[in-house]
Amino acid sequence: MNKSYEVEYCNLELRFDRRQIQNLIRDLIQEGYSLYWSETDVFFLISVRSGRKLVKLRFQRVRNRYKIIGDYIIKDEKLSELLEKLINDSRGHAVVKRFKDRQIVIESIMFGEIIRLVEVSGMEHRIIYQKKPLVTLEEVMQAFQSKRAEERAIVLRYELDYELSVLHEAVTDGREEDAALSKERLNTLRTEMIQLEL
Image 1: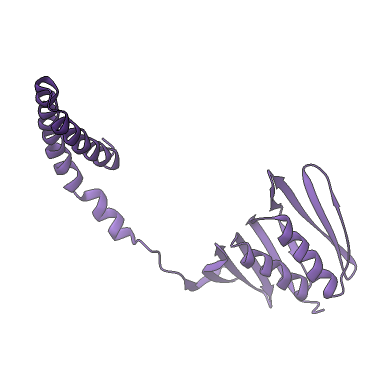
Image 2: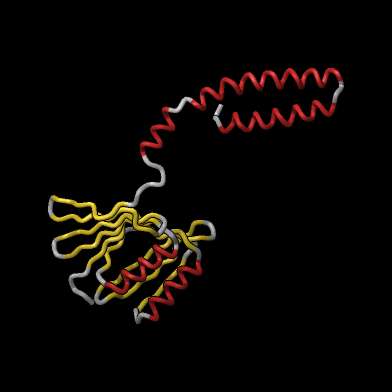
């Protein structure tokens, strides 16, 4: 074990089933860790002996699945790798802080993937990596400034009024086929109104 090795796991949001917990226990045993586990109606607890330290991993039951709760400081490289495998396999979210040589490297993980990597030295911080968003801020601003939805809403109201008058005539004259077609068009217009949030 590397004595200077230290990783802190914060804001963990991992959800998984019982099989994944059993796989973690199996992996820990295969790596030679001494451990025991217990379970109640609410929690599943795995206690892992790492050197002189006992690390207690707490899992809260949420219906028939589990989520890990709490923040953890791990000073064992192999245990850290197994916890990161769990984050990746469950496509979870976490903030991982790696401490080494008076530096902190902070990884922001979403859906099991690193989206931001920051190096902190004293008061300075440097962004090493940042995943580009799927939608840029500029595209969001353009969508808010766009008048297309408002313009379409005005036309849509006219189309709706017209189609209601067509339906009224068809029902009054007893033309069932025309009434059915008109109802279909009204349903299409209704769906579009819901999409435009009218």
